[in-house]
Amino acid sequence: MVISSHPQPSFSPQLLQFLQQKLGLSENALNLGLRQAELEQAPLPVVLWSFGLLSLAQYQQVLDWENDQE
Image (cartoon, rainbow, N blue to C red):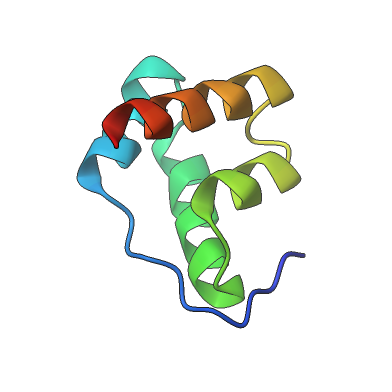
């Protein structure tokens, strides 16, 4: 469990689309991650990785994608 004392920004539709379309995350897995990330106030990619829903390589792809969006 990852708990942050700082509120996390809301999840962008682009990130959710990337996770589903590019990484093949199911809607159920994504919904689980969203609920848990909100509960823990933790970044969604970290929660998905900690639950085993993203591999380390996929987690790196998400980080690379987020960097490209800035």
